[in-house]
Amino acid sequence: MIEKDFAELALFITGPTWIRPEARAAAALPEFGHRDAENIKRFGPIFAHLRTMARVGQERDVILFNGSGSTALEAAVRSLVADGETVLNVSVGAFGDLFHKMAVLNGKKAAQLKFAAGQAIDLARMEQALVEHKPAVVTLTQNETSTGVLNDVESACALARKYGALPVVDGVSLFGGADARIPESDPVMYVTSTQKSLGVHAGFGIAFVSAEALDKAAQVANRGYSSDIVTQVNTARKSQTLTTPNGGLANQLAVQLDYIVNVEGIAKRYARHEAMRDMVAAWVERQPGFDFLAAEGFRSPTLTALRTPEGLGSAGLKRVKEAMRERGYLFDTGYGKLNVELESQGARPICRIGHMGDITPEMLAKYLDDLGRVLAQA
Image (tube, rainbow, N blue to C red; front, side):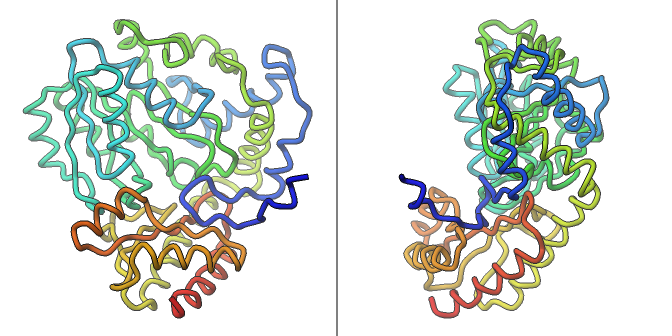
């Protein structure tokens, strides 16, 4: 049996994240037919709780894509950008870059506005890009997983609409850990997924879709099948998925969302994430040589990216990772491509601390204490 070789680690990476035992065990609940009456017992509450967390009513449809957050992001590109139109991909890190790559690989006319690692969206520069490129669609990252930057998407969405562009927001690593503020920012499509702040396994991309998005998609050719939000919404309105779902994950998600909404409570969950962000900030002040990558006021409540001390480097971070593994943790050595780029420029690489999902302040305090001990010996 290979199970004996599986390490039990507390994941303090930036997703997938640690799963509380009750949510993990829910994967073993009875299987079901996704077109049977049993389906609604899982997906009915799932759709309802997602609406509650997003603070949206029936004015937006909720779609669950089989795949990941990236699957839903690509569906936005394929469904909303017509031939001959320009999509402006605003990027503050690797996942904004991914949105741009998806647009290019899908044959869309794509322009990119790229900011340095750790920098949030500069609205003045974004306005210049809107004037220059006249995009029909603008993609924005609310919470950049590679850099820990939290963008002001309310202002960015409003600016996009000022120039007649439809804003699409990637909230993959934020939703479930903080208020996504979907009604206030009013994107035509807001995308997230299950494996980060919602605290279950990967397998569903989630989208909150406006009627405006569906109207636009109806005018776009070659939307594909599973990437077509018009096709997807027909089954979503029956509390179903278009294609066969992962039944174990559906059981997990039903149990977990009920826990978030009815047991922990949404407001308390968000407050816990803010408290953990502040715990990390206080820890950083006690650690010599560490600096925040993101500026104050733009730091994520679900993860923190840190410039590491001089001399530690990527090789040192890997040693820290293995030392933390021996203590029962999975340490995040930073986004690989970004660290290669930083070190090639003579800059210090970064590490990240994930404090999302169901990680508790008590777990985080112990992790930070152990990490401090390991770093002192690095």
